[in-house]
Length: 160
Image (cartoon, rainbow, N blue to C red; front, side, top):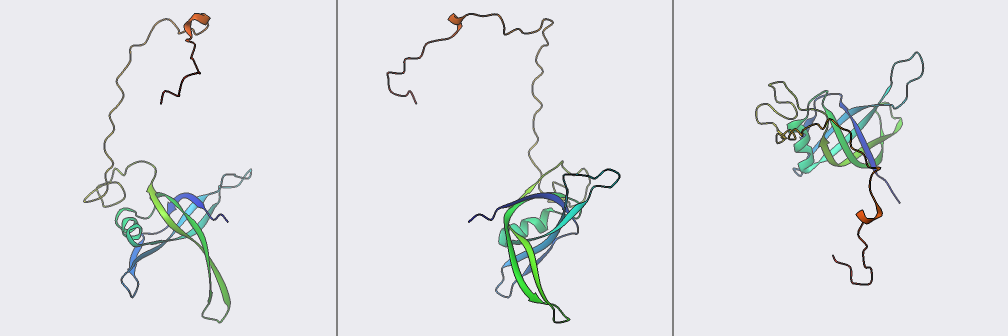
């Protein structure tokens, strides 16, 4: 059997950390995931998907993510049955996340949102690649001969 879900979307609200009676951290939140297609003359639609995270992942989400942040989630779909206040039987579908990741660009604001600010996660700065001199003449791969290739003796053991 296979039950794997990978989603990327924006948080609909700030996540809130809770604890079970046995002290295990948990967090439930909802993300808006844009649909891939748009009908002519209509706006793009989104699906709103409930996510549940546990333990350190719950603490991570609540510490670094805020409403509107782009988030990537990997997990599995879980269903549960319950009875609402009117006595109707209901089924809830939610994604139980195993992995949660930052996506998108770093926040430029000074608040405590994802990627930065006071005590937030800050990805290491990447260095720009060194500039290479631009050649005036185009590179041509059409010029060459069969002598440019070496013959490999495959009678020996594999060299690695």
